[in-house]
Image (cartoon, rainbow, N blue to C red; front, side, top):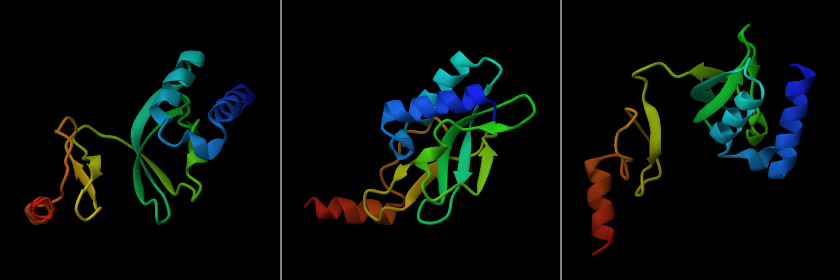
Length: 129
């Protein structure tokens, strides 16, 4: 990583309160970093992490040679096993089921899902009676 990129990432983490505090700020960070370093390309996709994190939606940048420059890698205290760029038509994480807690994946632009199945919806609705 270029020293200027590393310096920017350290300053961003410090502004947030440390690497773990960048959780949920990946899109914001990459947009700021690309504005500062136009040679970087904004990338949207997923990262595969060890349990309990597993597959997570994520944003990062890359250089022209394909080298990943991730300004919020510090949020992944369990580490990252693999980066995977989003391809048109890939499912995206929509949320977690309000009944059972399983992650819900679907097409981009779909209304945010609240439940993963009709059974979970029925059980959830019965809990409000």
